[in-house]
Image (cartoon, rainbow, N blue to C red; front, side, top):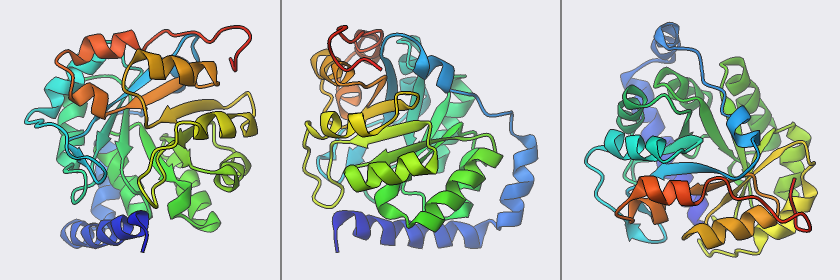
Length: 267
């Protein structure tokens, strides 16, 4: 099994545990008490780079990254730094996250929130919205076309924006055909966990100019963010570099507002 396959097995097991404790009907009922979803797209389409700042304790590739006893406090720093959206890892086994982190962050900030997880089932989309998420991640490599379409449409019906993540040309074509407005190009191969920074520049031309491209993985600072922006990114999703810095607000601000040279891949 690939790393992605192994992660999804665990995700499904944890999903069934949550479903047994809280029925889908109960989750749907909770949606009535949630404020309308926030739209991240105006900020992500604005001139200059945006940052999707991530609350991330650990990862399969790097192990422990940071102790984050108060995810809401970190999210506040991200918001103060001008983050266009905040990504909250909710996968438990490999990333040390939880839906409780998402709920805590939602109570602290008004910034649009992305539920970052390996979403494979309708239930996860529903619980994301019930917990206050405004965006949900759909990883093309983890989903067949029918499931990808169903989850994308369900998210849209709930007011959620989908960040559709791709890793190669075939997956990029599937995301474009889906009609995804927000496409994330992940430079990390989820089958091997190796990072290939050139992946973004290879795949960006395959995405129509009216879509918004997000560069994921391989961003350690403003220089990396600028390189991605020059290749066509409107936003960068950053986790490790932000949770390890002593000043996350300043780190977010330093990667915000970067503009591609006229001769480069500005979109």
